[in-house]
Image (cartoon, rainbow, N blue to C red):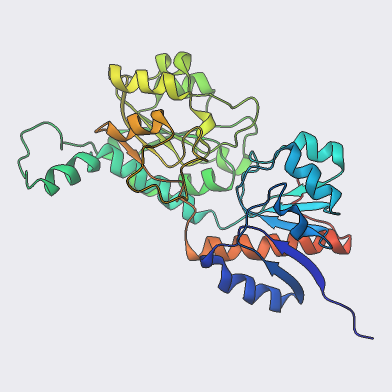
Length: 333
């Protein structure tokens, strides 16, 4: 008898992912059940008979994980690089293994470079004034700086940070790097410095770190105080890297001259939801939006056709590696 195809349940399948789930489920010969529901205690019953799940960035707390475990789930692949939405400690205690995915680093690295250029050229002010048909250049709100005259710090030199360095190398700016684990190849191209030295020397600091325990609020009142007056902060990594209260104080005092943030703390209740006409349930984001020198985008740096394809394909491959007992390059717990 022919072997039955292996089964995977994909929670929170978005419409933009449908074509890729169809393509890769056929390519890899796997039976993927796609559901638009998010994983909760109530929807855990959908996972009956599917030991491997694919999820997106919905919160996976102890209650949800326990409900899924009771239904036979033993592996969860999140279709994202970050996995801070998963209670990893509880998953480990239950015996549920966790995997993330990788995708081409160009999406986020391109976005980060775009953000740097937009921030130093005051694009938010230029666009706002142009909408109001104010085309004057004497106001002081539109004059920018050129990248060649600036020192740029890349905090985190993993796959995305390395690509940002590649992109910036053509602009002629000085580039400094910081990472707990220095890249031998990059050491021949850029100077690695301590976090304190990066804060003191850089005109622009772009964050590309995971939200690990020792990185939470790495941008805080103390590190901001060490930075140059008018420093530009770029964050396309994780919102928890920045202490929002301290950051807002620094923007209002002028210590931070400009910023571009694709991620912020406590963004989960907002991003990827249509909240048109509603009061935002996050006061900090409402205030950040009001600053003329702070650009906010809703966690979309990754969002390209290639990234979505990679995320779906690698999540399926990760689930299959677990089901087949094979080595899994994406398994993290």
